[in-house]
Image 1 (cartoon, one colour):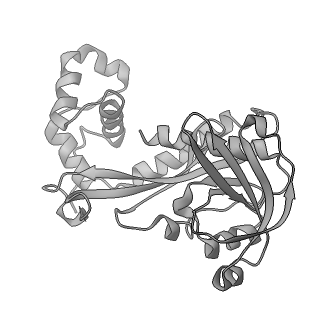
Image 2: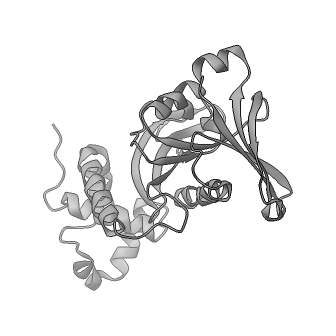
Length: 274
C-alpha cells in the first residue's frame, strides 16, 4: 500500500490545503509558490515538513480522506460548543438548521468518472446542513452531481424539536411526514402546483408584507395519503423583489413573521457555499 512522505505529515497536508482555500489559490503550484515566497514564516504557520508540489499531489492521491473527515467532525463539535450559550433572537427557536446542496465543478481531465451531463464537465454535489446560530456546518455529504436533493433527506440526521428550513427542491411529503413523526419541525417553500384546501384562516398584519396565515390540507388523493396531517401556509409579499413567497410548515406556534424570518435566514447557507 502506498505511503505518504514522512517529511510531509497529515498536519502539513491539512495546513497546505487550508492555506490554498483561504487565500484563493488556483493550483498546487500556486500554493507552493506563495508559501515559498516567505519561507521564514512557514514555521510560525505550523509547517514542519517540506512543502512541494510533488508532496502535496502524492498526499492528495494516497492519503486516506477519512483523516480529514474525522478532523472536520471534531472541529464542528468544538465550534458548536462556542455558540451553545448564545441566546437565539427574540421569537426564534434555539435549534434551526438550513438544508441545501451545491454543485462543485471539477476538471473533466482529472475526474472523468464524475461526468456531469448538464455542464458537459465533471462535478460533484455537496449536501450541507448548516446551524443558523453561528453559521456552522452540522452535517455534510458528497454525492454524484445528479443525486436528487429529496433523496438526501433520508440521510439527514433529524433532531426532535429542531427546525429545518429548506427551499422548494426539498418539498417531498413522503419524507416530510417522517420528519413530522420524528418530532422535528420544517419550513419549506411551496410549489405553485401543490393543491391545498383551506381549513382555517387567521388575521395578519398586512402592512409588513404578510398576506395570509392559514391551516390547510393537501387535496390530491396521493398527497393526502402520504401526508394526512394539516399544514400551516404562510404567504409573504416581497416588495423589493416584487414576488410572493409561500411557506409550508408543521409548526403552529411561531408567529407568521418568525416563519418568514427563518426562511430569510436560510440565505446563510448560500453564503456558506460561496
